[in-house]
Amino acid sequence: MKRLLEEFRKLKDYRKNQVAYTNPSEILFLSLLAVMSGANSFEDMSLWMKERKREIAKFLEKPFKAPAYTTIRNTFLNMDSKEIEKLQREWVEGLSENSEGLTIVATDGKTMRGSKSKEMNQKARHIVSLFLTELSYGKYTKETHRYISSLVDAKTFLHIIRSHWKIENSLHYVKDVSFEEDACRTRTGQIPFVQTMIRNLAINFINLNKFSNIKQARKLFAWSPHRLFNLQSFLL
Image 1 (cartoon, rainbow, N blue to C red):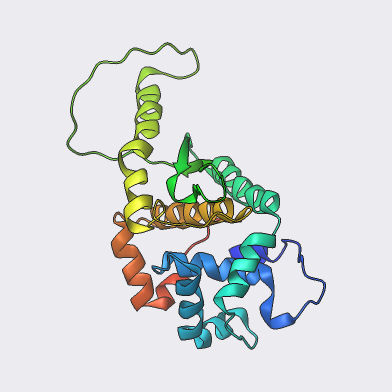
Image 2: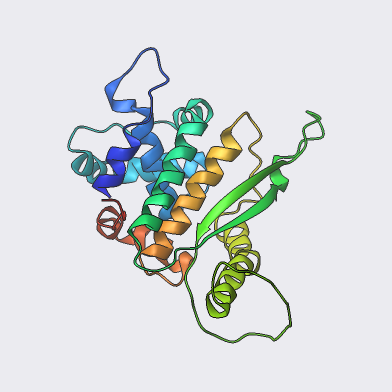
């Protein structure tokens, strides 16, 4: 994960008073690790950082002071969301370039129901997500669909179509139940978008590191943080 940390450190610091121990790019990176360890709220993230401050200081190779949840929230509110999106996109593109076979990125749109506010006359946010997919085998029901394409062979095209439906059938459930996405009431500014990008990165990292059960993987990282800090980031 050291390599990924360095990528996060390239994000611009939005603060005028740049206090070293509250570097926002590092806070965002640690928020990702907290989410992978079971944190679903800013309060959870802050608590995780306080409980793991020794491991974090060792990993960062410098003294660490855990930020308050309000500081974490301000980081999500003020960091450049376009830069974060670019980081995520380049990471996905890098995986595609380094893959020996065909890499498929499944795309999905989702309405964040918890972000709707009648009092503020604010509609629910709609966010597009990218997920890396892989072929798996198991029980299935049979339906007939017909598609036409000159790009790939029938077997590969079948894999692409199944990858699309994989999001609808499983990842929505994971994000709503395990990550409590629909229950999240955050509505301010870009926070819902940044939260979604962090959750997406967490899910992708867990899947790429060959964990078949995301709920169990998050528990494992919470109980054994050394497993989390030593994960492969899939960056060259």
